Image 1 (cartoon, rainbow, N blue to C red):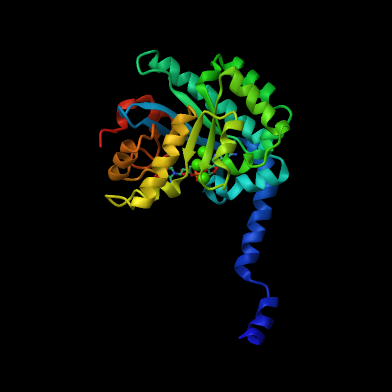
Image 2 (cartoon, protein in one colour):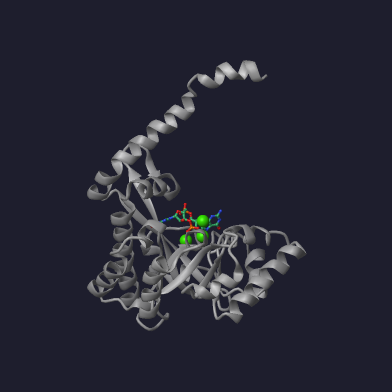
Length: 285
Ligand code: C2E
Ligand code: CA
Ligand code: CA
Ligand code: CA
């Protein structure tokens, strides 16, 4: 098998070629795409597990590519990170979604409580010296207070992060911006390490939610989530769960003490208008 495959391995794999060409094509098209306004944002509601109310939404970027149609972030964020375009792209996402948060707040006034916006931050943006200044300016220009913003940083981006990398996050947290640790539980970080980080929210990775699909859930999965929630709460951290697809998952996660949930069960990511009518989200199970 080795000798037969040996030759073949040297031949070009047409599919891999096509993927590489697309990757190359997408990479070179990224800067003009930003200039031409081909990116757009979908919003997915964050729902309070206790009372079912919508507390905010996560901004998720998409690319309406003129040839390939709508591309998800997994297709182009890594390319943008590689070329550095993630810095202006991330700034655009922040600006656009803060503008949206302002519109929601105006629409709902105090009636539905302040809607907050969650924005993903790439590790490259964390290392960029303009982060704090840009964020302050964007908030001021939109007339939005920092407490309306939550920045999501992945656990893996902060593992082993030195103080230089944490400093901008600390400054933002001091200003009142919430920092969430995204994809929590996938990064093998030392739990004691959490105290060092300026985070106020743990976003439990979807893999944990998947373990809650059966009812009753696997007892080991239950124990793990229970442990994470009690640790988080003892450190004064709120727990958000993502990838909630069924009412059974929502119910188990609520019983386990998770605070906020996000997932297809409540709503798929969608246009900002959907968040105008908060009653559209039926979280009563
Ligand atoms: P993430 O931050 O972990 O976002 C959650 C992902 O789960 C989103 O995928 C969302 O559409 C998907 N999702 C939500 N509910 C469910 C559910 O119930 N079931 C399942 N199976 N999936 C669900 P999406 O939109 O494709 O985004 C993928 C990743 O791309 C995000 O993962 C985030 O890491 C990154 N990303 C998205 N927007 C941005 C951005 O503006 N900047 C940066 N740096 N990264 C972004
Ligand atoms: Ca996220
Ligand atoms: Ca996540
Ligand atoms: Ca993820």
